[in-house]
Structures are given as structure tokens and as C-alpha cells.
Length: 558
Image (cartoon, rainbow, N blue to C red; front, side):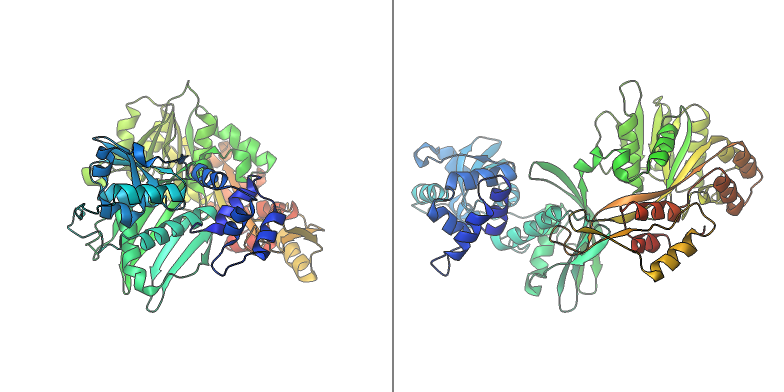
């Protein structure tokens, strides 16, 4: 019945319309070779068509309604010519000067809306789901004469839609690549043309996972489809391009940041999935232990100063900063951010997008927003001495400033600031704390099992714990692998942290240009846990595995 029966059956089961016993029985009783399990469920009366289509419509944010061919106006028929309607499997329902609503033939063909928006220029396109028989009957009735002329559209570069592979099969495949990634909670989609393969990989919990490859012959069409969706120039294949796709899946608003780069065998496209539901993460969900959470909550509620989050690319720094802003975003405070790019739009916060083409870089934007009298400022990243100086001076004039740096550990943030040219007295006076972080994969709760550490693991743990406050756990945990975690044993990620606070002694050391080793020694005396120590505590608690902590803290010196 649908283009993805297995997914529909899963939805119906999750919502209580079907039981696993009914699904199994239907699968065993299929009578014809071309009959699907869903067809068998429908024919047996286990579920009705209204329930199936209503569930699909709800899942994808569409309305479900019955269709009356007699009620379709001539204006609606004129809005969608016959060849377009038949190509995309739709029937117009209502139309006016600015918009048209269509009913879909394929209940999983909601992706046709995207294509119609390019084809029916000048009109906004909405869709409803209707019973397939009603849609086909309406199509046969209103387009019986087949007299409508063909419509051809071209993008801004003059490339035909057909050349872009903008047909039903390619559209469905491109949308399936995105929706499957979202369903699997991937953070990135990598579309990579190889010599003999068109490779698709998803980054899930920080690790790349190879998916089934589409046919190599569809490479050009699929790449062009993604470029159209992200409003890139499809005829330009010689230079890198950036774009953005905004979609709604299952009632969730998602943004995809798209990057295209020419390679030897075609254009490589990477899509970063920005899920606004991640904005609801609080500090506890980030993985803080209770004492570190208390410390960090006090830091982000200071009246002034600079608080830095450090770590390599992909260590979750932006997520932590957004969680901080969400915690302190109250009506009595004015918050302004300077970002490149603005990844998430947050209600109640003024967000400034860096635009180097017009001279609006971090330092220029920061100078301007300080005249807006904010209480709290978030700078996406401190990249140069000018931005750093302005941030430090802003902190000294009564602002609380959050930002990020690329350093391996927390005390090295001081060294980094001094190296880019910030004066020691500014760093000593303005910096309140720096927090280094990494992301480790969390053990899957569904297949999590305890075990006694091996002699080798005990030896490793003993060596790691030597000279630290960490202890060797008697019991450890691992995931054995299940369907929920894709047989990896891990599901989701949590942070491990190292919080470096600046006290009077550290201020004097900074003023004297002391090396990071002395700063680290003083911080350890104050009770700072290293990244590895924090990770070992989380190994003992069953949050993650020893292998994960060792993987992300290879450079951590105790």
C-alpha cells in the first residue's frame, strides 16, 4: 500500500492500533506474492485505511480528509496542470492567487510538496492525505481530457528540473536519506561520491556508520536534488557552496546546514542536522556529576566575568553554551549572542549572525552589541586578539561573557589567550573559569550488563588512578548490543568535564605569565578533577565504558 510499509506498521504498533501478534499473523498469511504485511492487515480487518492514513498524516504534520471530486473548483484545476499532477501524484483541492492545497496519491509521498514548490512558482503549496481510491478517482475525473499543456520550470541558473533529477524516485530517495538519518538520531549526513560507489554515511553518537549505497547512476540526480533543496546553484560544480534546508518531520522543526565541496569523483555533500529539541537539554542532561553541576551553576550566575568552554571540534561546546543560556534566560536580563552561524533560534535572546562579506566579524559585532547594554553576552568563538580583548574589557565593565576556545584542557585556555596577544592583567582580572569537555558514548540502557573487570582492565585502571583522586571500581558495565543501539552497545552521548576556576593565587600566576603546568598544579590543589578522572567516575557509575574514556582522553596528563 505504501512506499515504506515496515515504517508504517511500526508507527501503528507504537500507537496501539496493532499488536505484535497481529503483525506476525498477517505476515504468515499473505496470499499473493505482491501482497505486503500491511495489505494483509487491511484485508483481514485488523486495521482500517482511515487509521493507517490518519497515523501517517499525524506523523508528518499533515491533515487527513476525504476527497470529493465534484467539489474541486476550476481554479484549483488550472493551478496544477495535468502533467504536473500525474508526475507528482497529486490532485488539487483548493487554490487561490497565492496558494494551492493538493491531495497526495502516495500516503508516504509528502516529499512531493517540496518539488511542487519549485515547479508551481509564485504559490505556496500545502498538502492533505486522502484515501488512495478517492485521489485516483478525482484525478481520472478532472484530468479526463488530458488537454493541459506541459509546464517546464528552470532554476535561477537556467538548469532544467529534469536535469536535476527532480522526479518522483529521486525525490523519494533523497527524502528517505534525510528522514532515516533523523530517525536514527544522526548528527550529520555524508554524501560521498567514490570511484565505483556512491557512499552514504551517518554520524551517530560521534561515529560514522555506513548505510546502503544508492545506485551509482543516480549520483548526479541525487546531488542535484540536495542542491536544489538547499538553494545552491546546481549548475556550479567547480567551487564549494553552502546552503540550508528547513524541514518539519514528525512535528519537529529541523534545520540542515549543507556544505558542498568538489572532489575527484563528484561533489561531496555534508548535511549537519540541527534539532531544536536539543535546546531543551538542561545541565543535568549534559552529564555533570552533582558537585561539578553545582560549581558550574554558580559560575554561570556570576554578575560579570568571562566563562570559557574549551575542547576540539565536535566536543559539544555549543550545546553546553545553549544549555547555559537556557538556564539563565529570564525576563529581567538582556542576552545577546554573536554566532557564525546562528545554529538555533532561541526565544527571548537577541542573536547576531556574523557576516564577513559586509565587514561584520566577531569583533565588529561585539563592539556594536555592547552599546545595546546587555547583561549577558555569548560569543560563538574567540578567534583573534581583538575579539578576546573586547570580551575581556566587556567583562571588566560589568558584563557576563560566555565563549569557546579550541584547547585540549581547561588551564591551557589561559595560555591560548596570552599567545594570541591578550595582556596578562586583562586575563587575570576578567577570566572567572574555563571548562574543558569531551563527549563519550553512553552505554545503551536496554542492553546494559554489569561484569567484573579483567586483570588487564584492573591493571590499566590502577595505573590511571595512580596519583589521582580516582578509585578502581569493582564492577563495570558494557552494552552487549541490541536493536535499539544498532548492535553497538552505545546509545547517545554524555560529557566529561574539567572545571578550572580562577582564584587569587591563579590570578597572580597569570599576571606573572606562569606556564600551564603551574596553573594546572594549583587547580589540582583546589580540587579540580581532570577529564580522565571525571571519565573514570562515570565508568564506575555505569554511564560509559573504559574504552570510551581512554579514546577521548589520550592526551590527558594527570
